[in-house]
Length: 499
Image (cartoon, rainbow, N blue to C red; front, side, top):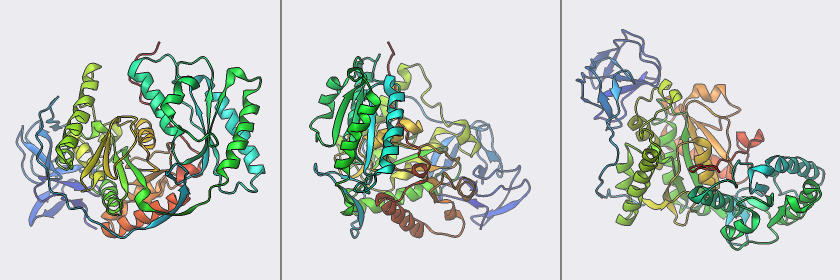
């Protein structure tokens, strides 16, 4: 295996796949380049002289400008390269032709719901309307799961009882409160839940009566409500309600369903120098494959599109979607500016340690997850997906907030690529895909799939099929690592004042 990779023929850097010691000579495009200093794995080395102010090119695009003269063989990182991005930009629509491929359908074993939706899990969800009842929800889940484990006969297809605590639902104003209500309603309506208990306190701003219009029409056998202030023993009474919900959920059985019904969210976190080379392009190829079978994928993390946004804009299926994508980008930039924050305060310390030097560097790697398909939908935060194909979703880069937003938008599963590792989960199965084999071996209790083999002894076509097959298995009931560990997280995007 070679120790470096030149990603694009126009690049003036290579990425070290293993540490390149100072003084080691490599051959690139028939020329010898000697490392002037140690180049850590995942980091960049100049393969030609780059003058101060000159462009540093990776993935075939500018990832920043040199702060100083950089000699051939020099280590390129935050000490000698800076972002070239500005604030609000003007964009023009220059559509890129996109070939729409069709491939043979595949089925997974899922749950058909009476409303026409499909689910990949059949759990009972407890959704608190307000943070004041979080501990009550936790106590309900503990007691309900104990009962469920002892009474499995006839309830074999019911998964587990899961609570999704959060600190909001009261003392919020305006859009901030609207977002909380919308996300809670989205989760209540999510088809991965065979039954839902909406647990209210009674005096909160987002109480059950206020929340019901956001939920819309619902199946009274599937969604039930309990106001804690109206019960002498809200925990015992809630468990009795969950018994009813379990009886209803237990009537569902897994059956073959076309993968065209699957919605998969795509997210990355804790990136390293291999993220844009292994895991993110792999997820992009997966996305293209699922879309070719009529399925749907959702890409989010808007701040990590900055610097690569024109690639997505030019793949928009029409000018209306282009304008929505421009608004998606500029609205997020204005959000930062309205809070007097730097738009390009990225990458994170962990990203930098892994070899990411600028936001353009990170974004160009991040957007590899979108594959090559046309953009068919652009979603506001809290909006649910309606159009098959590739969708863009407004949400921040924060792992828990973005993954929750993907679930609320309708994702059945989230594919999460990582070069640093993380144990977190989301309201839906969250599959961790390692960018490197070292991480996959070290944290096998976190990692579900190793994309690091792409720079070792495997190829993209084989690994794409393996990942696709694993997603079908997970959709059919196989647990991901975070589920097996009992982890279930959710986080709502907090944007406003607290009363």
